[in-house]
Length: 452
Image 1: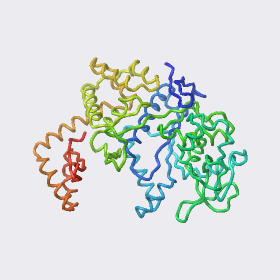
Image 2: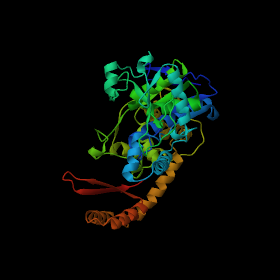
Image 3: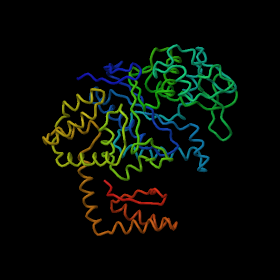
Image 4: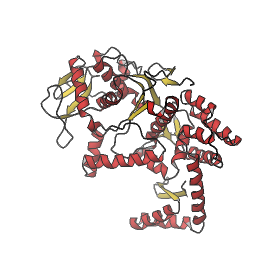
């Protein structure tokens, strides 16, 4: 087997993955906080670590790889959103998890081996917190349990930040009960109407866990005190992963939590940071309305996972055309191409793998389908989608789309939303996707395209 090298954030170097046990390769990646639909930036780590999961399964055997991706279903944002929408926390999280599973499935991601929910592991969190207090790494104060950052000499070695940088990056909460401004919350009191459990460390009043302790507890439950790979977005390096590492190392008296820490780069939409205030906030569901999951997946993988990515309509169109050029002949049952495998074993070099797929398509190689499958691309599904799209386009020729779009826009302006929705649904049935927006003067606009 070719060596598998990955970039380790902690050592700032590409390192060869040497599993602690080749018969039990273990990986953890941070999953969603389920208060709203996941956005297109959230799709990047989902796709990146799905590709790594596939590569590891091919290298070590499907039964020998365990992939854990958690769900955070207790958090301040969830409480706020539930109050705003006038629904229970359970209703909000259940609906959001259902949407998430639909989206991630449409992106072609394999289900992780385990997908624990934080609320199912509060007991594990309390046990870890008790251990941290017993070892002198945590203390109680005014109904809180806090991690004493100064008690762990290696704190900061993952993010490579100075104390001043860490204070600024963590947006430290100034609280009189903290011994040090950098100390962070492991457990806190619950307000009225918020989820609450029996508190650890002798605290009488009920409370709830802090965010960072969740992943330490769930990773330990499924993967043990130490494991092979921990992944997530670059925005999680500090403070979340730094704090998570500190909790695990201190609580279990181990030198390192994970052998390799991997992080994917940022995503911008049309050259700007994605934000609702910018008018460029795109959910995965929005993106799936305009392109297939395979197209979105390839659009992500055309850039190396560690590099920042610019999400543009042009990128999506390029990915669509590439897939169309590959899907014309997907016959053959050849094994994955050696050059594609080698590219993925070199720190998931997906751009190099994509370039090789183009060569295989030109060669009409029998290994094209299996090689694309390593990236999670299903060329047979793409071909079927192309045939269906051609039929929809043929049907749409008889429809005056522009006239219907204009009628819908007129209905929206007049607040006849039922009429507008009926036109949208009619066009959607014909494979036509609409995108609403505003022009420079703030007037509503609608553009359309054929959906994949």
